[in-house]
Image 1 (cartoon, one colour):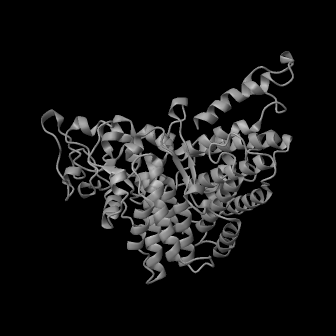
Image 2 (cartoon, rainbow, N blue to C red; image 1 turned 90 degrees about the vertical axis):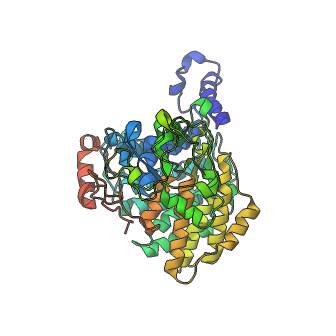
Image 3 (cartoon, one colour; image 1 turned 135 degrees about the horizontal axis):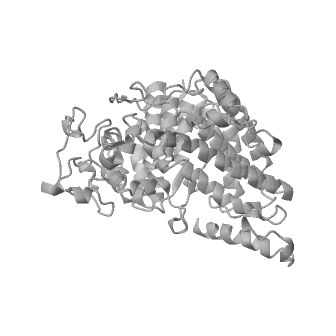
Length: 532
């Protein structure tokens, strides 16, 4: 991203200063260059980064979904009490702030997209308009999957006088998004205007089309239980259009710490309290150990003994798969009945004296997750292959078998983990592992269980925690046991959505009231439309 961020910062200045030599006649504020001067392609890196920031870190993904879906766990006491929002479903002092982050960031990103598209329209940049539409659908579908009903058809129209847009039902919004996505993809012309300053695909329009159709496939698969006919129709359209064909196609956003565009999840996991109290869950570690998954040694380490080592992110732990132990969800370090030392398989404290670490020798994320230059995995080849396997297992008309898609997805998941920049799994090892762990095709239920457990593990280990949660809501896999911690806000159930931001009751009260009425309430456990 560094190259393109620099282009973004300097390009605005060049747009203003190199137009016609009559500098006095041009607004010299680089942030207010006229549409005739400004190249809307310069907005694209900001749109990309803002989306990546929305789906990571303290925006919500780590503090909520990572532990709601039991990929991670935390004792959430001491300095890291903000993790009580996570696997204990207990409000912290900043829960109201966390609730609104995805909403605010999503609409801020969509607003930038609108600005980019408006400027692109003046210049006849039809391809940039289409790429903007892909970003808009990706962004607002993400927001909708987190909250439910939302403004879409009237959103981003303040200049037209619509300052309190209606909330569309999620079903209406999804149909409109899918139609908008289809229209945008059909308008892309590889001989048309080039896409510049593209941090995702370097202007490769063929890959943008694959991303758009892959997004279409994932959205279509959300609908399997609420509108199977529409789901099948858009799965067919996505396949015909061309989804990801290899890991080289996947949407992986680079980060750039030196220019202020760090990976937000890495920012979080570098906080001392997070280093100490955030661990991989027992559910995930047990899953990876059960099949000797080669990702285990790449993602997990047991810190050296002692409190100092456990609080240091620069200390390298033991990544031997045999010693990895996942932290059970729902425990604390408060000395009561839910203290982790009371857990039946508690491995004991490490260190001694003033350097004792009572949290125990549980597995934490390795250094690749603390690397602020780590990429953000927006959508991967592995996810798409596994979703195609899901479609095949359900009897959808797709080109290959569930077994073949599953094997390809599993291989892709293992090799893509290397894009973090640390250790990697070779293609040969990935192929051998997939061959040794074929899909169970004894029944559709058995197949769907394996497929969706793998989606959970893959998105979880790639730190796409919101997608782990969304696919769990869609599929019901893996089967999770909720935590019923004292004082929780969800009646001991795993949250199915986030509450609407409190500010909406002031800025758009009627729209919010209509949405809450249509959804049947604004609670943590109210299902969104497609979550059946």
